[in-house]
Length: 319
Image 1 (cartoon, helix red, strand yellow):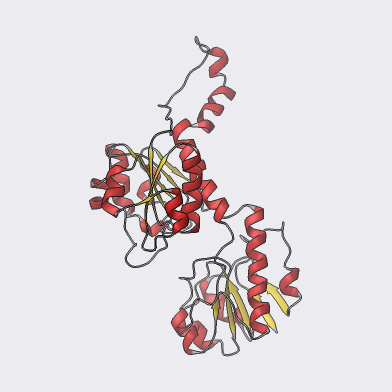
Image 2 (cartoon, one colour; image 1 turned 45 degrees about the horizontal axis):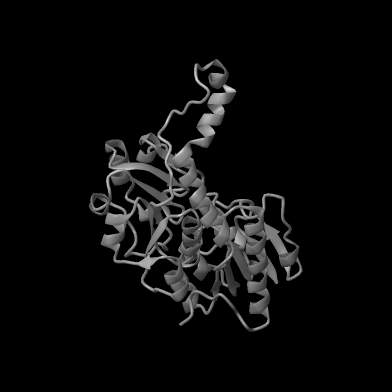
């Protein structure tokens, strides 16, 4: 079996091994693949893996040897799953690999907003502490989280991981999710979205990107929030109408935002959030600890192994 990985660099920049896939067939790994080379690089391969390289219906139709599509991620919107289904090709994702890491990262962004640790360290290294008249100094308001309310939109595995840490820090946890569960009830209180928006000091987005959640943070929903709210998003960039968030940051309605995702990645130079006040932006790295990527690799290999054994798993385009 010929196996092609179209964009393997972010999953494995050199600190992991592709040996699991090499054991299953003739493997070719490309660091990156531009759209115009996708057909050529898939060629007569029977299995293809993608992380962020789009596989539209016409590519799936043209690559006649394809029998398996693996996604090196949880989200699979880069694949035309309906076109794959029509050809009888399973699309298999990696549903759980970075739960702890992404939850941890959401809290890391929150703590940076609350304490500006990096800024104050840089100020000390620049000599300001040794030259200052007082035994301490701070350049921003410092925020204590104990007793404040975190609202989490999307209370699945990752949302609950974030909620668990928030609760351990003494925060009240509110959750909005279409599918309440007992584990979630043990961590927080399920409430309607409008209640969450109105009552939360911090709002974290952990919902998937669907038509009904696209732009869920917009001018209207922001108006329902507390003045001075903190917003966190390390889920999907298009959950936020970026022009509306930028305006809210610049006006002070939203005190600060911590974002690990944006609508168009890599970020465009004209993204309005780049010039917005109090906006922390990192380059989509919540998922990327080596431990998480190793789990992703293991599941991706197992997906193909299960397919070859006639028992496909993690199929996202079943009838």
